[in-house]
Image 1 (cartoon, protein in one colour):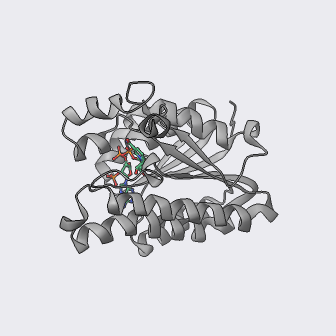
Image 2 (spheres, rainbow, N blue to C red; image 1 turned 90 degrees about the vertical axis):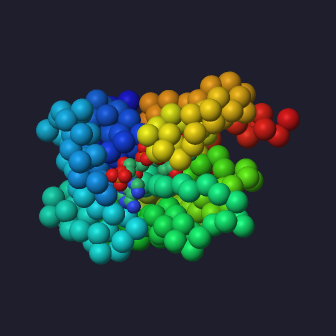
Length: 247
Ligand SMILES: NC(=O)c1ccc[n+]([C@@H]2O[C@H](COP(=O)([O-])OP(=O)(O)OC[C@H]3O[C@@H](n4cnc5c(N)ncnc54)[C@H](OP(=O)(O)O)[C@@H]3O)[C@@H](O)[C@H]2O)c1
């Protein structure tokens, strides 16, 4: 896929899926902006990618004031975005009986409110014909134990994406959802014990965890002309997680 001089913004681009996607777009010739809350993580990502085409922005997507900072950076860059990848996300897993209000608010503020208002603020900065991608999850449709809040955030995100696809279609902007299954990332490792990896691999048809690069490839496909007639839909890049679980 070729994205020479295309402008790509990835929220949550300093580690995991976002970082792998940033690398893939840079290798395909794009100018890429990545965001995150933590300046050190962004610095490490920049050192790893080592490209003048990469720019980093400290911006916490759960705070409207920081979304405005991001909007200002893009506005002052005087570019139109060809790809907006709304990928930042957090997960806290516990049974409904034990979820705290803080855990509920943190997940909804990051995974739902943050993406909604990032999209809203950046709509004027999208080029006509741009591609918007949301990172959802296979658990948006599954009903795994302990995922009451996280799954609800991803279900809400799917609906926002579908409505956005209809609202932005007059500008030929395509909006799609990527739902990863279990992917080996720092984010997943931080919330699950190591033995959970084996279990997660075992409930996919392919019997393995996914790699962030595999989600990056899905993102580049959806953002490319190869997906020119695809909008408002969800691609499950999950190793057959749901199909297998339903057997
Ligand atoms: N890994 C999986 O198995 C899996 C499966 C399905 C869906 N997902 C989804 O994939 C996306 C990426 O997750 P990942 O697994 O790659 O995790 P990750 O390695 O933890 O990456 C998350 C990225 O988001 C950033 N981030 C988190 N909260 C943020 C906030 N409030 N504002 C701005 N940036 C923020 C993180 O940087 P900072 O910490 O520095 O802010 C980091 O760059 C998430 O939406 C997640 O829900 C992951």
